[in-house]
Length: 194
Image 1: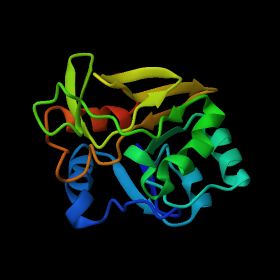
Image 2 (image 1 turned 90 degrees about the vertical axis):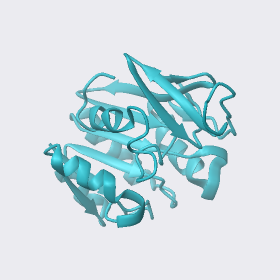
Image 3 (image 1 turned 135 degrees about the vertical axis):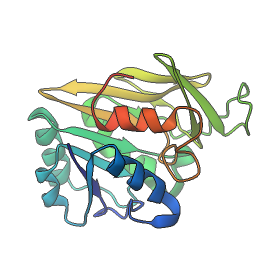
């Protein structure tokens, strides 16, 4: 399984030792080949494509390519953040709307969390995760629920799937080993059911 981690839209880099180094090492030990991809068109060479906090908007041509890649069998994962910080939610919604999904661009706080209210507790299929600073997701098939609503949703399109995550930091170095976050990350990247 080859994962292309896009950086052409100023996303958080997976090679950043401090923020995502634990994720990079965890995925490598799990047998996934993860590469940072600086040129958007090079993403075609990967089975799974990740856009983690894209700070630049997408062109119509790029959106068309993403739809084509998903239709042809790739998994594409977009990870957002709460309150439309840096217009990331707006940029993601440019693409997500084409699949019938949307980040709600809201400030959702989970009053049931045993951590700070911004640490939304997510449950699905026996797994329990923590999604810090998460937005909620509308549309598609919810695959991760918190007390404030869905924070993970997906759409099967053609032979592939499009996944929308409300939080880009649930798999960062701080959060990766909270509850079942590492297992949730692995299942998302290997197209296994949560």
